[in-house]
Length: 257
Image 1: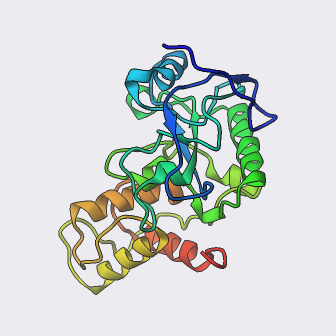
Image 2 (image 1 turned 90 degrees about the vertical axis):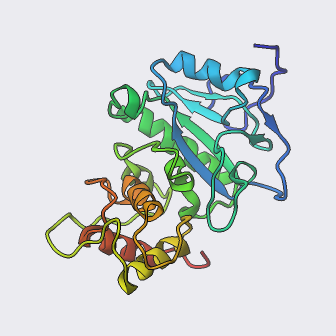
């Protein structure tokens, strides 16, 4: 890795600055209005940090939160880190310019997907609160990578305890309706109720067609919604629990969203 000049950390919670060369100017926005959470998704955290700092990889994030709760900053918050990739939220496609990215050390679904240690979740929560104290990011724009790139990404996944962050004022969340028997919608079905489901998902911000057909894209987006908001079962099927949770989320959205 080439030498990268050090910089002063934006957060007092940062234990170490590990500069990455992979960043640029924010485009079209003065400051970020989204916070995006990821997991590193590699067998080794050291390998993941090396990856985020390697010029040839063309990928980075602003912060990494290690398993023991230590926090490293790789890119200044004023800069556009390259963490979201091809993504979409509420009409915006350059999510990197609009967001701050936090990588949470966890090998992810491909490597056993262990639970997130409590000390790590505590550190993520503290860091998120600190970031929100500097940037006017609305609760409903604290998102998972899987929310903005549902066909490509699953992180930070259904094991990430979003309710802990919400308890401390970070993010928008409702108590999920428990799965139960009843009517459900799945791939291949058509009709007005499916159009209404798609419209609610699209209005919240997801990239989904409002066609009245439960297509592959709709299934992918429903699965992404479940990974964040209805984590007890992630199957891409819009059952009563999924529909009720989405309705509660939509009707409790912060004013002005």
